Length: 267
Image (cartoon, rainbow, N blue to C red; front, side):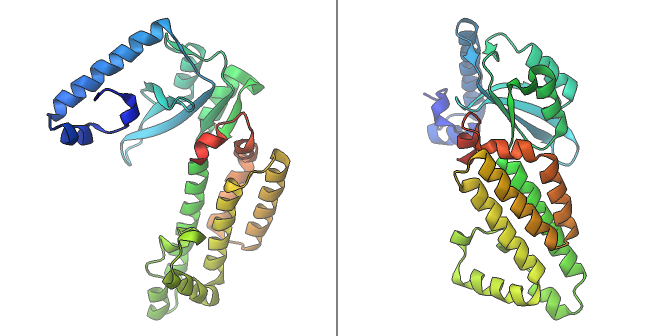
């Protein structure tokens, strides 16, 4: 029961729920994993949608591992010791016994060119590359944070600095989650700092873009409009983000391919 992958609970939670030691739970999970790996020898996992995502062993130290997942079956396939292009290429060419990549249709990655280049080197155009939605929005959020900090540093008075305090999360809130107080503060921001307010509107539009059932053509057209409107703001942090969008536009728009991990990544 503890080893059932459908539980999707961490070791600490399982230890508390079942009132048994942390190490005991860890041992059970490791044994359950070994059973699964043995089963793969006779019944390989046929992967159609591959997730490629890095995790930091020590935050801020540049020490990364690479986690490879089956997005359809929601299981971890393997963990690589680093995020180097050569390491990933070797794995894609020669996956471990029990992992079948012959039917691979799409690979979802963050905006790290090495992952895209590795998939292209092994599969060419046969596999569609999809830029992970989370990382796209994360990059936009970072641009908004930089614009907020810049506005605060350039504030002429203490009163203006005070107006810009506590905006970190408000600027990233979706419209449907705004309280009456939030809306009032944004209206005030529109009058005092129209550029920051405009960034909240662009953020909402990109969120809604991801939520809309577009065709590839429609999605491309709407994203081009978004980029045009973003350019008008002449905001340096936003301009850097827009360049990233242009560099990854095909992979970002691939989100709307019916054969891509789009539906999974929307959840």
